[in-house]
Amino acid sequence: QVQLVESGGGLVQAGGSLRLSCAASGGGFNKIAMAWFRQAPGKEREFVGNDDSAYLADSVKGRFTISRDDAKNTVYLQMNSLKAEDTAVYYCAAGFVWPMTETRFVSYWGQGTQVTVSS
Image (tube, helix red, strand yellow):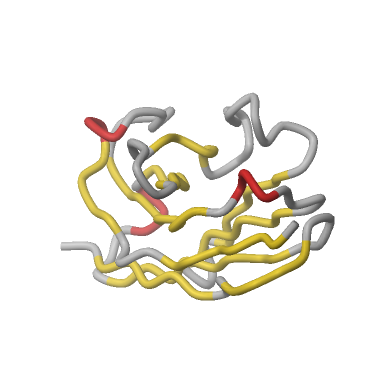
């Protein structure tokens, strides 16, 4: 069983930056795929990017970067040049399918962290 805890969300002005972190516990971190998803009000949860940024949603390319530190069992989402449309709850995800670009591939979810971008 993998537990995921996100942190780093908050309120930021458009054009600003935030870095989200996702700490994993439960063992086997280096054997699982990680990704970030987000869900805006009234919309379905959507893929943001996988853990080495090899796959990124078109809407965030050039602005968001994802990385992982296996020594710390942590994956990061660096968000730059934030826009109002980036406002959403951001979820860390773990699973055994790579690339994990769809919610149906996810085995474990974090609780989510709110990101609000003011215009």
